[in-house]
Image: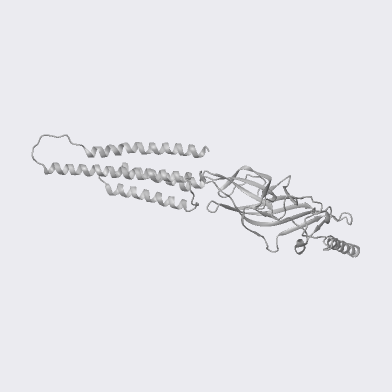
Length: 387
C-alpha cells in the first residue's frame, strides 16, 4: 500500500513538470523558427558577410559494387553536416541542451545545399520515413544527417587489368552558395568512417584497399567563374587476382599446354592432330570473348589482352607446325609412290627424307614451344607485377 501511494504521489508531482518541459520545448522551437524573425532561405552569416563553416563527415556503411564496364561504383552512406547558426541560439532562455526536430519541421531550418559532383544517380532512403535527422544544440550549432544511396563515377585506367589499381573519388560541393557564403571542411577527427569496419583495410568482393583513404579540401569554378568550396576523398583500391588466376590464367595456360600434345602424336594421325589444334584455338577464342564482354571497349591494350593474344599465338603456331609437318608427310608419300612406279634401274640420286624432316620439326617443337612460353610468362609477370 505504501509503494502504491508513493507511485501515485510521484506521478502527481512529476506529471505537470514533464508537461511543462514538453510545452517549453515546443515554445522554444516555435520561438526560434518564427517566420517573422527566422528565414530558412538565408544562410546564418549572410548579413555579416562571413562564410558559414560547414563541417562534413561521411560514414560509408557499404560499397556494393564497382563496375569496370560503366566505370562507376555504388555505396550507402550517412552524410552528416554540422554548422553554427547564431539565430538558433537558445541558451539564454532555457537550460535544455538539445532540440530534436520532427521530419515535418526539418524544412523550416536552413541547411547547406551540398551535392555529389561525380554522382550518376542517387536517392534518399524513405523506408519507413525519410531518413533525415536534425538536432539543434542550445549554442546554435546544428547537426544534420541523412542516409543516401549513391552511384558515383570512377574513371579507371585498365591498362594493367586485372593487375590494376584504381583511385575512385568522392566529390562534394556547395551547389548554389559560393565560397563567400559557405565554406566546407572535413571533420577534423574522422572525416570518413567505414561503418562495417574500424579501419581502411576492409575488403570488397573483387577489390581491397591497398592504401589509407585521403581527404582534402578544394575549390572549383563554374562556367561563370564563380568559385565554390568543395571536398574531395580518394579511395585507393586494388583488384584481387585470385578469381582471374583461377578462372582465366590457369585455364588458358592449360589450353596452350594441351595444344603441344600434337607434337607427341605420330605424324600419320592427321585427324587427331588437326582436331586437337582447332579445338584449342576455338576454346581460347571463346574464353577471350567471355572476358572482353565484361570490360568496356577501350582504345588501348590491356594486360589481359596481351596474355590472351600470346596464348592464341602459341596455339596458332602449333597449328601451323602441324600444317608444315602435314606437308612434309605428303611429300614423303608422293616420293614413295613415285619410287614404286619407277621400276627401272637407274643411277642412284640423292633424295630428301621428308619424313625425317617432319619428325625432326616435332622434336624441336617439343623443346622450343615450352621454352618460349616460359620466357613469355617470365617477362609478362615481371612487367605487370612490378609496376
